[in-house]
Image 1: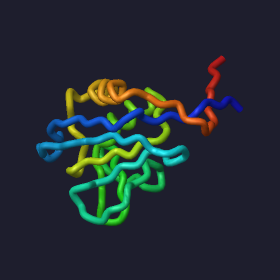
Image 2: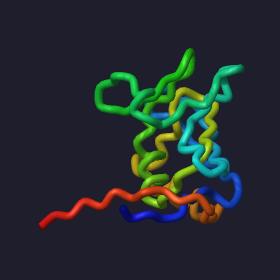
Image 3: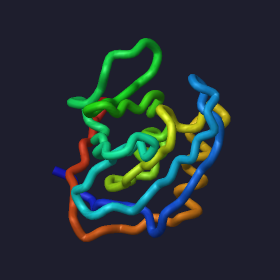
Length: 136
């Protein structure tokens, strides 16, 4: 199977804006993470909550959006943040936010991509498998 090195950010980065669902002023911070950490979201506005792994095990049912939950913490509308991280092949990152949803930005993942690129990307030593789909 094809493999590549895992990746994270060189340094923390922040994006601020307003949430689409709540209209709240949101601060979203990306933090570098250790190898094999994965992508996790943490609500810093809810004291004592653990980061929520962005995995299928933590997805909760919503109409027309993706949300993840763990304990009393839920993060709504994670699609654009996840698209930015996936598109840049970021494997390990802690995403902290002070609201129940990331900023809506311009409705795309571009502002998050730009924020991550400004922080820089660090290639880690651990490897990960890559799924390749062939269409013949």
